[in-house]
Each structure stands twice: as C-alpha cells, then as structure tokens.
Image (cartoon, rainbow over all chains, first blue to last red; front, side, top):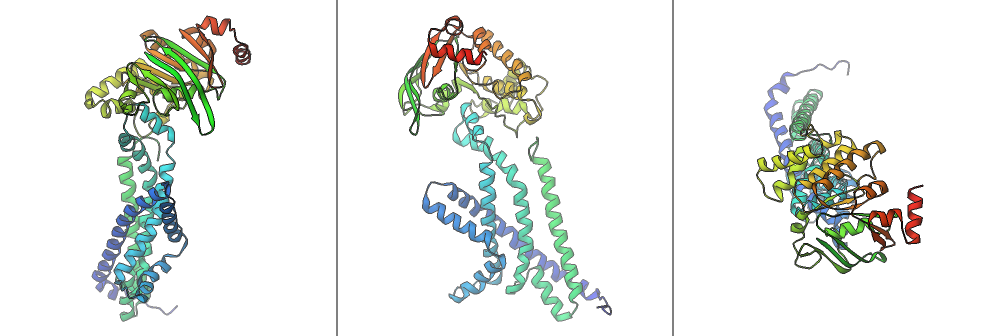
Amino acid sequence: MENYVFHWNVVFKAFPQLLGGAFTTLHVSVLSMLVGIAIAVLLALGKMSHSKILVMASSSWIEIARNTPALFQIYMAYFGLGAFGINLSPYFAVFSALVFVNAGYLAETFRGGFQSIPKTQYSAAKSLGMTTFQVYRYVILPQMFRRIYHPMTNQFVWSILMSSLGILVGMNELSGETQRLQSVSFRTLEFFIVAAVMYFVITKFVLLTSSLIAKRIFKGDIA
Amino acid sequence: MIQIRGVHKSFGDLEVLKGIDLDVEKGEVVSVIGGSGSGKSTLLYCINAIEPINGGEIIVDDINVHKKNTDQNKLREKLGMVFQQWNSFPHLTVLENAALAPQVVRGLSKKDAFEIAMKELEHVGLGDKFDEYPTRMSGGQQQRLAIARALAMEPSYMLFDEVTSALDPELVGEVLDTLRLLRDDGMTMICVTHEIAFAKEVSDKVAFFHEGLIEEIGSPNEVLENPKKERTQQFLSKVLH
C-alpha cells in the first residue's frame, strides 16, 4: 500500500461514464421513490383499515420490507424470480426491490404522521362546518405533510445509497459503472474515491435542496 | 332556539345521557355544571352532531340534528364550538386560523374572510397578533383565538366545553372576560363549566347534571344559592370548598 501511486488521469478520462452511472443512480432512486410513495399510501391506509385481510397484507409487506436486508430483496428480485423463469433486467430488479423497501418504510412514516395529528384537530375543524374532505385538505394533511417531509427526504437519500447494491447484479448505476471501470484499468482506489465523492455530492445536494424547500413552504413553529 | 328532548347517548355499554330535556331560548345563556362523567360535555358533542345519539331528538331552530337527511355540516355553521383544548391549527397564522372556515365553508373571498376574521380577532383582543403562529401564544390567547375562529362563522349559538379547565389560573380571567363580552353582545350560549362564580354571574339558567340526568335546573339563584336537591348541595359544597 505504501508503494501505491495514484493515477487520476484514467479516472478523469472515464468521468463521462461515471456521470452516466450517477444519472442511472438518480433515475432509479427517483422512480423507486415515486412509486414507493404511491404504494406506501395504500399500505398505510390498509394497515389502518378495519379489514383484517388488508391489515394482514399491509403488515406483512411492511414487516418484511423493514426487517430484511435490501441486498436480500435485490437477490430475490433478480435471482429468486429468475429461478421461476421471471427474468428481470438488473435495472428492473433493483428498481422493484427499492420500491418494495421504500413502500414498507414510508408506509410506517405515513401512518405515524397521520396518527400524530390529534383527533381534536378533526373535531375542531368539523365543528366549524367543514366537510370531511375539507378537514383533510386544509387541516390534517398540511400538518401531516410537515411531519413526514424530513423522514421522506431521508428515505430518498437512503434509496440513492441502497441503489449501489446494483453492483451485485450487474446494473450500470454509479457503483456498477465504477466497478466495471476499475476492473479494466486496475485503478481501484481512484475510481472508488471519485465514486464516493460523487455519492456524497449527490446526497448533500438532495438534503440541502430539501431543507431550502422546507424553509420556503413550512412556516410556523412545528417542524 | 335549541330544543333537547329525551336524549339518550351510550358509548358501548356505558350510558352517558339517560334522557335529557333542555330548552335554550334565543339570547339565553345556559350554564351546565356537574361532576366529571356526568355527561355535560357529551351533550354539547351531541348538539352539533359530532357524536350521534341513541334516542330522543335535538332540534336547532328548525333543523332536526340527528335525522338521517340532515346536512350536519350546514347545521354546524350555526353552532360555534370551543373546546377544552383550544385546538388551534398550528400550521396557520392567527389570521388564517380565523379566516379558514369562512373561506372554505362559507365560500367567502379571501378579502372578505380576512375582514371578518380581523373583526372577530380584534373583538377578543388579538388585534395585534394577526401574523403570529398560535403555538407561540399563551393558552389564554389560543383559547381566545378559538373563540374568534368560531365567531368568524357568524354562528347563532355558541357551545363552550370547559373552555377554562386546561388553562393556567392566571389566564382564566381573560377568557371569561371574552365570554362576558359575548353575553353582552346577546349571543346564545351553552357553557359547560366548573367556574361556579362565573356561571352565577352570566347565566340565565343553570343546569346541574348528575349521572346522565339533569338533577336540578333553574335560575342561578335557585340552583347555586338555594339548591333544593341534596346532590346539588353536595356538589356545590365540594367545588366551593
């Protein structure tokens, strides 16, 4: 190691490919987040519903997603389903696994956010003559959104980082691309350092943007 | 007027109201006193249909509150309610709190809704707090906001559910002053309260609730000064020390 000589030139030459990988990383994270949010809403509603079947189904999804490694989920999607003749592309396998885990985590975030709004807010709004729709639209959901906003940002950052597991099924996201480039150039350390910096810049950018938006749209005391 | 006829209400096996009859005339102030669990607050929730009833009927003006095809949202526009916990909307400013329902329920323009809201906020002494967020205010101020928010709907009746019980003692006065103000405006009010002195001062009628029934009802003088029923006497001796 003490004789290791850094060669950065090869990394800079490959930078466009790394950027391409980073784009794929963002692409799969954003999409899996959007679909994950939509499913999470359904799971949260299911878990809070009065139907035993819906509660069971939602709880199972949530429990498995939250209590198993993302790696396992990606393997299941790629190799597991492959064993049944369902062959997903690496991208779609990672996408599905991320949707699965995002939905599971966000469902609990949504349910917690919803249940943290006191029931008396509902009665107070109702007593002013609001319809149920108006109560949710103007009183409950805006407060809930504040409480789930930062956990949602965290989940998004985590999706970006988890998508690096794509490396294991040959997906050409940032980590996969880095792996490929270092294996043909043998500049392992250089490539992974640059990739790490790129992950850092991406997630930092997401977090900063998110808190800037929060400052603009959330006024008042509650976070 | 509000007519309450033989109202029964149960939560599961627990019968909370066991046949309540009560008339509230326009312009009247009726105070409801009684121990906790006697059903006083529940009655208010039944009057504005937040809770369904199991028997009897409640008629507000000519609206039969619990009839199937009654538009209960429309009914609630007539009935302002203020709760023990003030329930400010924490994501809205004081002015937005008071203007929200006029805007979305009554369909007023933002300008008109804000105008009414400002008028009511000034009325309860919050004229300098329009842009404040409620969580930065004291309980007394938030409770006055809740009153202004209800008044901004220009209701015919106001229901007060122990509105001073959750307040620090030094903040009770400002809220009671606001209620006196409303009485002087001629507002019809039902006040569930533990403030016996206040009830004596402002009420036209006082009803003493005991275990889901009205044990005694009459003028403040009759019920609070010269109660005939033993239970009323016992209750008063306990709360007046």
